[in-house]
Length: 132
Image (cartoon, rainbow, N blue to C red):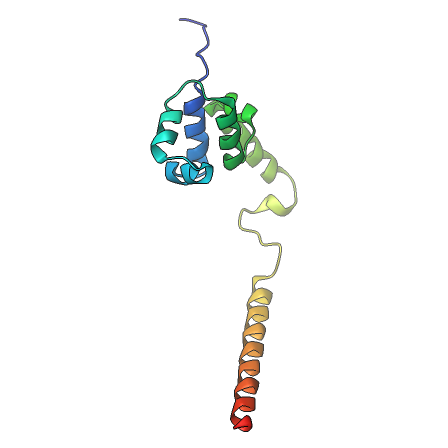
């Protein structure tokens, strides 16, 4: 068994980060101002020009170093640690669906705003009708 490390494949790393972000090639291409075929070509390349890599990193919301050093293991490790830490203590992350506000209060607030808008419409219509 060989202990030689595989060379970094920057294009593959870009592809995986893009996929993890839920972004399609077309969206990334449009954000940078290039074609989808060019993104496909970049993702197939082991090396990427630094200027282009900088643009891609910015759109993906990561650093150039994150792209260069990306590995599947580090992603799984990050999420495992995040999950372990978020459920360990007491706080906002105790329950994955825990709200920091009362949803019923938000519904009432929305309803009150809608009622106010309707009142304003009625007043406006009355002014129009009385003005004629």
